[in-house]
Length: 621
Image (cartoon, rainbow, N blue to C red):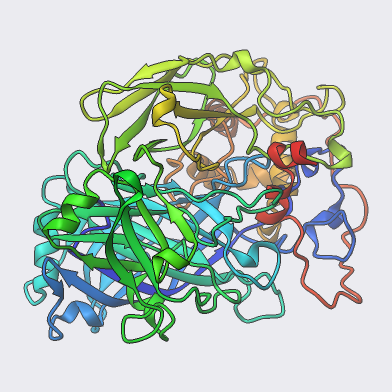
């Protein structure tokens, strides 16, 4: 059930993702050719793109609870939960947003987020830690606009370490605490869209958020919905973000026997007319279950107009796109083991916008982003389900799939091999069988990939390690159906690192210099490429480099430093030897700021640019 539970709250407001964009270009990882002008917003092709001075902060802004629901419908109007806000931490710095890699930017993860429910008097009645998670199902949501601004993506994770305050006055919160007692976790889902890349706007780096919080029940996964999955087919020939043929994006649903309803999440499925705007008018929508012989049972209608219509002002904020359809006995029986579909109304005369695969089967890894070191054993759970229930004793086929990764097309990286090589660095089982809970395991003990993404034929320091993709599919063709292109496992496998002892600045300067180049906001406080400044701040750096990556204060903010290099850096900071004084790589050229004549904000270097250089897109050209 996860967040799609009759007992749930919805919230809406704004978010900020103040990412740095210098490291979005893989070519900028070349210390030898890095130019200081790349750290400035300017009007030429080689620059720091549209937000070079970002600090990676991720924040909740002005979010409020917009509705709350119990087992039988909306909560009583007197429940104080309806006046609560949803906020991030009041005791530590903001969370951080980081890509897995410059060549896998489609799984950005939120690190170190704390979520609070705060009453109208400012009292925190729930404090919880957000388990780091990556977005999925990114697509072209807005019909007008360009770049990242048209996109929408979804985050599904859990809230852990729940600290409850005095919730006696809120029946809803008391029920929520009881419902999640078996796991000690809450499930949280939110959609992000309407992102502003216009540096002249007061909303620069901000966007719209709408989400849902509900109980996580025993045996439910943390990051994938144990339910029904309606899969969109891509528009032929489309590059960039995903564009569905039927206008609606992938979405999930849960059939609740006890509550006698179908909960359907359209929050990341409905297209919008403009960036962060109202949904496109598709007319009334019909949800049905397809029976044998082409017969269909109508489960309900999603109106376009009226008090509950998706076009009504405030509908999206109030519901986060979640629709509840009450079902009678016949409808419940029809929906148990038949494909769900969403079509126009009347259904017979309108196209089917979105449908569940005919087999009702779905498979995806729960956690699908991993950072691994050579020799580090990994067992990655893959969840198989059919008609929303775990699918046991079923063979899963596993294969390498780098098609959605984004190798560089920079002229500065022309000598770098493709992503996913050497393939033998990640040996993994090619078949796995699900257990009684529908779980199969991808198992591997990776080797050392070497330095395939170093520059100048591998002689110059470059991008650490290599990125890989592994996709699970059903081995039985009868269970296969339309594939969600984003349903694969992304792995960053770091290179081995065993420097000569004792470690000196000569060895570590290229690493520190790269962070100085690619995270220029730090230059306001510390030049990471300068020995004297690093040594002068050694105690603070030891603290920051020694923190768990889930801590929002951890360095580096990009979370792309291997544990081995982290330990070597900490070792050196305790005894910072200068070395022989080997000439360091330093940025070349003046730090110019050429914005003259730039009438439009720079949109290059974001997710849209990365999506456009995916291997699968190149293969279509």
